[in-house]
Image (cartoon, rainbow, N blue to C red; front, side, top):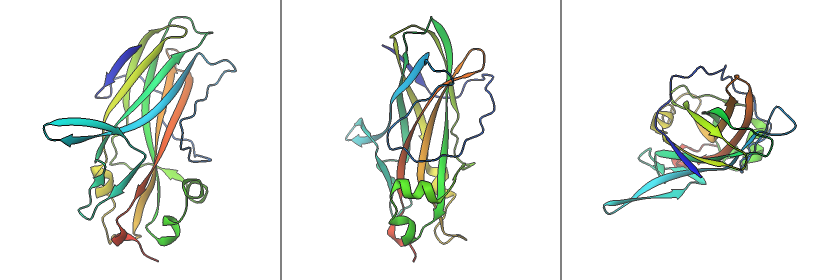
Length: 211
């Protein structure tokens, strides 16, 4: 297994990153390809956050974020994305570009949306972008071979500007109820090869909720 650590976006020639509207918010990662036989597959997409314990930091998987009264997020305001890119049997040794985008589902912070589950939210509200979120990270992965797994650790995504964009008492009382992290794999010819995603929920502080 090869590990690649991503810190910043590289100056690569990427295609148009327009987001397609989601039909469902998937709790687990999913992969897709433009061909019947996938050259690669993206698997095991997870989010994790660091927590300080004395002088040491440990990472734990994130299933949801909760806002505190101090307008911070628990378990943390920053997170890391981990995923595996797996070469399939039809693959010859090839290079790929892997990049990330992030979408949010924005709706009023009301009891109605608080009581919806993730699928109900996704069916009721369209996905969109938050310009304050610096979501693009890109890297080149070289000479991926059949049955080879390349592990990517993508850091750090900072959610503080996102939460700051939705201050309590602001017009519309909006809140980012869901966040979807998208992993894209592109061939050297510019064609999309595979995609995977992970969706997590954001819970606002109870003081935000209105009827």
